[in-house]
Length: 241
Image (cartoon, rainbow, N blue to C red; front, top):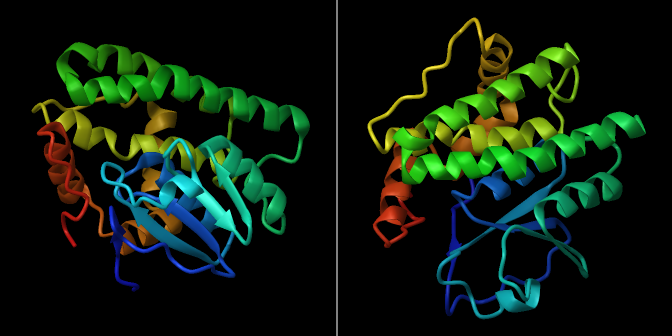
C-alpha cells in the first residue's frame, strides 16, 4: 500500500506521469466517486491528495477556480465531477461505466442531476442539524428507493454497478457519520425501503469500495473525527494516518 501524502501550501508539484492522475481529497465524496469508477474500469491511476483548505500554490495551474476533483492525463486536465465521468468513459471505453442505450444513459444523468439538486444538499443539512432535516432526507431516499424498484435491477447500472451507483454511494456512505454527530440515527422502515436497503448492503460489500476504504484508511471512526475537526473550524485531513 502506497504511503498517503497530503499536498498543501509550499508542497512541490508532482512530476508528469504516464498514468491518469486524480487530484482529490481523502474525505471528499466527489473524489471518492471518481476513484470507485477508476477502479471499476481497471484504470491504473495515481492519487494526489490536496489539502482543500490550504492548497498548494501551483494547484491554480491545474484548476484556476481551485476545486477538486480534477483528472490529469498527459497534457489533458479535466475538472468537474460529471465531466470527469464522461471523459473517463470516452477515453477508456474498454470497460464501460455508463449505459450503452442513449435513453437509459440520459435518464441516468437526469437522476444524478436530481440527486445533486435535491438529495446531497439534504445530506449536508443533516450534518449541520440532523434533527430538523432528517424527515426531508428520508423522503428523498424513498424516491431513490422507488426509482430503483421501478427499474427492477440490483443496481442503477443493471446487474452490476455503474457510475451512477458509485456517485450515489460516495454520498450515502457518509450519511451515518454526518447524522451520528448529533446523536441521531437514520432508521428506515425495512418494508418501505426494501430495495434501497438491499442496494446499500450490496454496495457496502463492493470490492472497489472495500479496497478504497483500506487504501485511504477511511472508516466510520476516521470520518467522524474528520467531520468534528471540520465543524470546529480546524479541518484535519490527516486523521488516522
